[in-house]
Length: 317
Image (cartoon, rainbow, N blue to C red; front, top):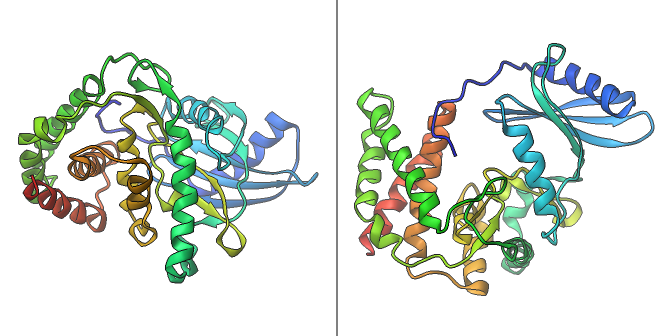
């Protein structure tokens, strides 16, 4: 994972819709009956297409080079193991003079993100635990896919987890120090990172024995639900790798995840390392700083709890 600011290619909502319609015509030979904007993040934009013949799909545009190939590859790989469906990739299209942004088409997963299914927050404890049980069981089947080496799914070449993760974590800290010195990162963030780095060898003292396939971004925002809040699919893997399986768990506590006991359920069912909670705090904080370095966007509502949690877990050592 390169630790650097990415200059995203410009792409407006209007362009997203126009390009999506054109891409479906080019790649599938079909005419769009309906095109609607689904939204996006720092580097992605997505549009829903319903074709005249009834086919429904999503076209996702990636505003940074190299992301399309990675995401399409990982969707296919994860789909082989997850017991909950992942969208199948229908086509990929590199950017060119006509449409300057890379994109791919994928099957539409019905329903809405669990993050925006607000009624789920008021489900009884039993229903919320049933949701957690299904999610964690599916993720565990993904983790059952093992590899001889640790690293990116497209080029895993490290003999140990720390051979892969330590250099990345060190580079994130180095960049964070540069941003702090330039007045672009708050002192409380860098103080928490420095304190955590001093305890790195303790936090990561237990060897990770298996290189497990991970989704990389499985929070409630990427779990789709339909009628009666039935899970309909997982979407949007990010930085999938053959990794420490616990690297997949810090996302469970993000957004409204704690309400559904996701992290607790996984650990209760499948176990955890001695310093799991310290590792998850470290992973979460480093991931958010990494995302800030890449995108330039820092959200205090997300960052501040991660900083507090890091200090809390360090006190437990």
